[in-house]
Structures are given as C-alpha cells and as structure tokens.
Image 1 (cartoon, rainbow, N blue to C red):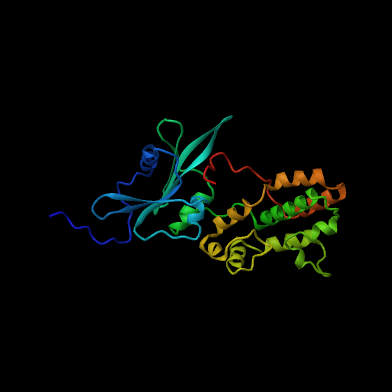
Image 2 (cartoon, one colour):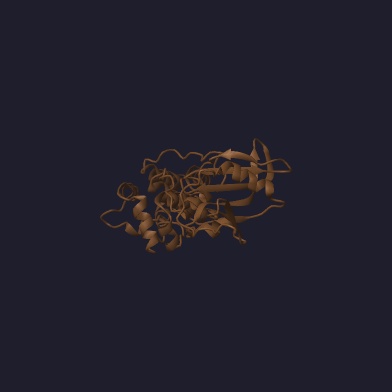
Amino acid sequence: MAPTCRARRAPAQPPNLDLDQLAESLLDALDEPMSALLGVLDSSCGELELAVRRSGPDGPLAELLGWSTPSDWWAVGLVASATAHIVDERYEANVALLVDRGGGVACALRHDDGPARSLGPGGEGRLLDACRRALALPTPPPRRPVGELWAQCWLDRVVEALADGAVMGPAEATALHPLAPLLSATSPDLADLARNTVASTTWAELRELAADGLGRGLTPPVDPAVAAWMDDGMFARWCADAFPPSAELLEAVAELAPPALARHVARVVRAWDREPPGEDGADDLFR
C-alpha cells in the first residue's frame, strides 16, 4: 500500500531547499517567456511541490499586493520577462525571484538559449518587498526621511505645472506643496513649516494615515488595505518610486522656472537638510 500523506501543517524550513538551484531549474525548464506567481510547498510525502498561477495583464506584482501566502508554503516567488542591462547591451531575458520563510532570497536570469545563472540575493525593489510581505516577513527599513517624499511630490507638481505653461511665482508654487493646507498667519513660512513637520513625522505615522484612508495629498495614491499590509520600509520605497528622483526634478525646475521661483523652491528643499539624492544601484533588478 502506498504511504498516506500527512495533513499539511505550518512549515519549517526544509533542509534540502536550495533556492538558488531551484530558481535556475525553473528558468531552464521554461520553453517560452512566462509571467507567473510561484509557491513552493511540502507534499508531506518527502517531496516539494510547485504551485504556479499565471499572472494577469498587470503582472505578478498586482497579484502579490495585499496578499498572504497559504500557511503551508515554504517559499513564494515569480518568473517574468524583463529587459536586462549589462554594460551598454540590452536584451530580453527571463528572470526568477524566490523568497523563503527564513528570509532567504534567490534571483536567477536566463537569456537566449544559454543556461540560467544565479544573480545572488538581489538588491531592493517592489517585487522583493512584496514577496517578503506575502510571507509576513519584514522588509529593510526606510533609507530616506519623510521630507524626501514631500520634496519629490512638491517638485513633481511644480514641474508639471510649469511644463503646462503655468505662470507661477513663489505663492503659487507654495500652494502646490503637500503641507500647504497647514500654513497659517502664525506659521506663514513654508520652509519653517516643512522643517518642523518633517522632524516630527515618521514613516509609521504616514503609513497609518494611508491605511486609514487619510493620506490623500500627503502620499501617492495607495489602497488603504495595501498600506496596512505593507510595513514601513516597503511603504516608504513604494511612495518614493512614484516620482522621479529629487535631483532630476530640481534640475527641471531650474530650467523651467524664473530665477526667483527657482531660488524659492531650492530654499524650501534645503530646509529639510536632506542627504544628496543617490542612485539605487544596478542590483535593483526586481522593480
């Protein structure tokens, strides 16, 4: 008589789960490009099973947002098509990303007819954050202060208005700032208000506002249920990724705005004592 599988239970990390090898094997087995959500689970008969769900038109990220894996999944991940960049070359490739319940991460890439190769644990990005949150794992903490988000949001609004031909001075630009509704006769200076508000506002507080549906104007649009499902690190990166980098936006303001307005905008942004905007790095593949 064949052995009977035991009822599934909450998983502990299987000793024979090699994420790097599994990610490479998944890509080598693909006959054509594919976008799908993956789950690795224990059959309780001594073998691992693979659950595969093809992604809809919005891709695997849309499938992951706000979702939690079944309790018997060892790992969650995805396969997808992507444009890879190596030095000055661009080419289409299949990529795989896997995250296990112990926090292990594997990334692999395959292009043309060559074998898949491991890329190591990867960097940061929305897909990696979403896989971690689907397993109820923490993501890396925020690297930028809340003021960086408000600077990006404001600069983006100013650039959009100027590009549309708006005639704008400091007062009109100030009115576009996320904190403008808080200005009053007793606190008329935007730079001072921004500096004081940023010093007293955390990402946890801002995410809680978004989860309660009260973040309109202070954050990019985020579904309240998804904001509650995120942690502070994912929420911070998600919001920041909604806008171009601040350095790029400041350059656009300098090109489009009259000198007096450009000086006003630069003064307000400097008031946050921000660290100079930096690049995220070439390892952030899974955005």
